[in-house]
Image 1 (cartoon, rainbow, N blue to C red):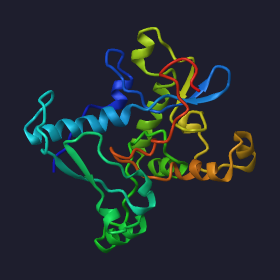
Image 2 (image 1 turned 180 degrees about the horizontal axis):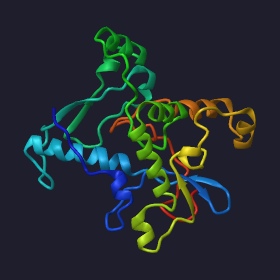
Image 3 (image 1 turned 90 degrees about the vertical axis):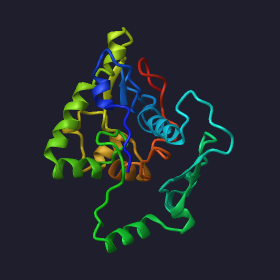
Image 4 (image 1 turned 90 degrees about the horizontal axis):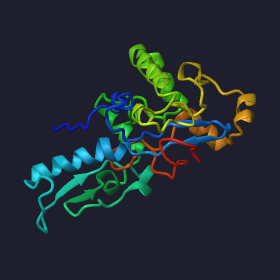
Length: 241
């Protein structure tokens, strides 16, 4: 098993001297409109280091040209529930294969198999402080890991004014940034219950309420980030739309 890393996105977000690959923070603009910053984190912190390692394993580290016909077969764990996210690789030296789709396995099939191995309690893959978390995922962190909860609460407070690099360069965020989609501090966010009045105030539909509770439906992987849908974004500063 090989592990690759491009650093710690939370440390980078708070370091004024480090280039920051934007994560999709929920923004409350100065005019009261909601928005979201663009998402670069999957490409920079997941896909890029994987491709670098693949090139290294093939014997052609960047910027060496990889000969035609030299490639790796990459298995991606996308189930039938999210078959629409299965894609070909964007480079010729990687060929994607989706074994769960080949076996017609759904997420439920995967859970049954893991249960047979005594590994049933396997959560969706995602980053600890991912803004795409639903209330159930935030509650799980709070109720099962106090240290991680304290960590994400502190990070949420620290990024209120946006990333440190942009602020240091004079491109400050014209609004406030939050990890929770309600756009209030995480330790005060309504993660335990959303009342009818709160739902009306947020003007959310039944489907949106489900996302608020359970997070974006799909899991997350370097090749299928659950934030792949078009985001309401502009850039790391100014009015997010």
